[in-house]
Length: 371
Image 1 (spheres, rainbow, N blue to C red):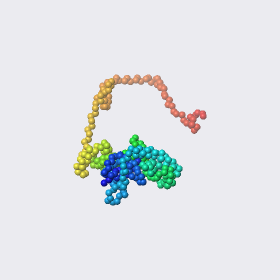
Image 2 (image 1 turned 135 degrees about the vertical axis):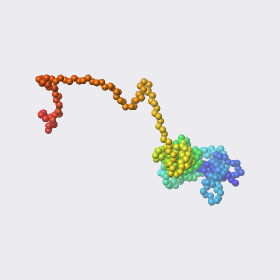
Image 3 (image 1 turned 90 degrees about the vertical axis):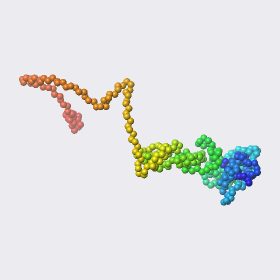
């Protein structure tokens, strides 16, 4: 029974072929010449045996129900060194062809963008991959290109992710695009992956060079989903030794849980400690409050030592000051003034005159003065 093999071509294009069982087994990355539509093509082996058969059954859509999927095309032979050299020469001539196709598209004023061109190994077909936002009538363009290159022209519309995989480039991580180097298939990426990882939903931060969501969002998604199963859900209310506390956030890398109590406020607790508290609180009867926490005793005040060069504090520094007791001494009697003789009149003393503010008249000037 022939063996199923998977052959990859330029870009992300691949197909499945049959290889005779009695022939020498094929190995990965072996260059081969395979059958194609109206000719021969050049590719390299990417999977063999059961792996290729499993991929073929999952990708096959034209087989009847209950029918074992089997490829219809076959591998002709292993490619020689001359075949590899001819394929490399065709690859080097594809970029100038793309520039000519771009010029013809501008001449016909078509709203499309030529992403890549690909020669078939025997040069009986030229495939042109393009992107467009809406439907384009390119019948005149196909006739013009067929007359110019003297071969069969096939135009295929692709998406922006397939365009990035064919053209290549450097991502924000500093490495080449995964889709153009090692990623075998472009699987769909949804916004829910970024939400599960608590990433910013800003499109400029989670989009790649193609303008779509980053393919690497899917690499660690299973780890985040498996790790969050060990933590309580955010917003859930738990019963701990403090009472009912609400889960504010979780830190899966440090294994911490952020809790908030209505009376005691927020706190951060390790996942293991939280599990133990929940188990201890579950033992208590329903309605019974947890044991009161001990009130911390105040620490004794430390005796302050005087700084060098200063006087030590007195022990009664904080007490109110009292006047010292002074013994009372009897004062000598004040002699009385002798009465003056009645014949002499008393000497008048000097009286101080009291100044009064000047009175204001009707004109705003003191009374008795002239304006």
